[in-house]
Image (cartoon, rainbow, N blue to C red; front, side, top):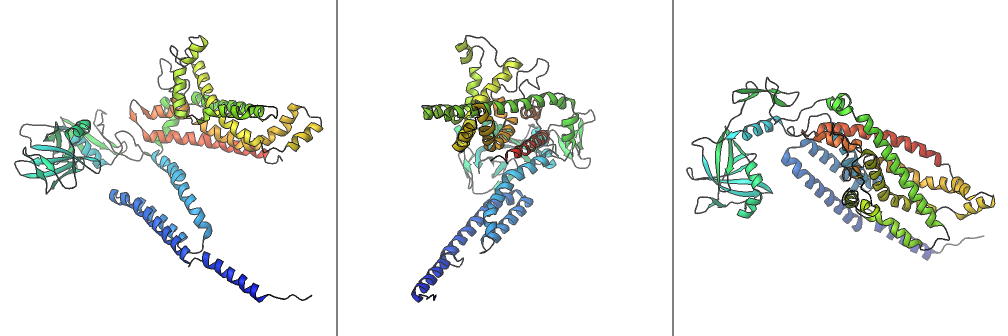
Length: 527
């Protein structure tokens, strides 16, 4: 048998292949345009991210941005490395939204960061001196004009004696030129600054009163909205002894605590951020104020998460099975009604449920003719938060179970029925194992979510009810709400302690989730 070749057909095929290569070859016009667009996008994002880093002097962040930009350019401006082109966006997002927050939280737990410990030592010294400014006889006075620049409040100050104009911020005072003066000697306009009207300044009166412009030996403060004075600092820092003195008292620098402490143990409220090692992590385990109620809160937290998952899964699965029955009518209407709680904003619904549980005016007591203090006793409060989460959570399980039921072949059920299996046996031996293929991973993720369900508790009960002798821990407190109250209580925010507590919560959830995912492997063999 002889095979003949058609030259015309071969030429057309070759031309088609060449045309296809021309369309997709990296050197073509389309390829060049895509690469130029990618280059512009990458460089634009890099410049946008670099500007604030350079202005704040964050050279570590700048180096990370430069390395990330170089990797992106290396991947997208070469014709090869196709897998990297798809993996890089996901990798960058993973690092930005998962890895970095975890690492930052861990680093925060090793510091004393909190109210009064947010800046550097020099910033703390400036805050101490400016906060102690007092007006004295003969203090210099200025004509004040309130303005703003890039959203920050600025004092435009005119000195009639020196015929000079200044701009004062929390960073200091500097002389400006080209300012226009009004009849009263106040500045009416200055290049680069937006002068506020009287109404705008009045709306920001609290900020104006709080602003102190640091100058040598004191600070400039406002006196109303049209005048300012230069006062002397009652407290002054002395570099020789590394201390702050004033009012006949001396506060010496304590680098371990990050604050100035006097001999009697009192400390100035303004401090600075320092590393404290593992003290925050240790305090979570050894401080009686923290760990005294940790076990009780953890037991309730574990029960709450398991109960919510079990109740929502059971109700959602039951509703899905009922509406999946072939004799059921009006399925679409029922499904729409069941999904409504899931479509509502959870934040608003939690507040509505809190009002519904009100003892005197709540809808539940009015409908049932009761006078039960639902949120006032430990048992009823815990029952209430479980009912609220059941109402909010079961539609999600219903949707997942409904989708999973529709993927089960009817032949399986018919074969089981032919073998004489009862309805319960068909559900337990066929339907349930196949459903768990889809539901098991979602149950684990739902457990992790409810274990840290801050809104579900805080917006309904705020962690209460609280015993009369201990307002720090309530009957419905989860670890996350307990941590929030400890770290942001009456003594101010303690971000380092909060980060340390969140690490423990993260480890607990991670261990339980890993165990749960490993348990779900048993369902992979079901076919």
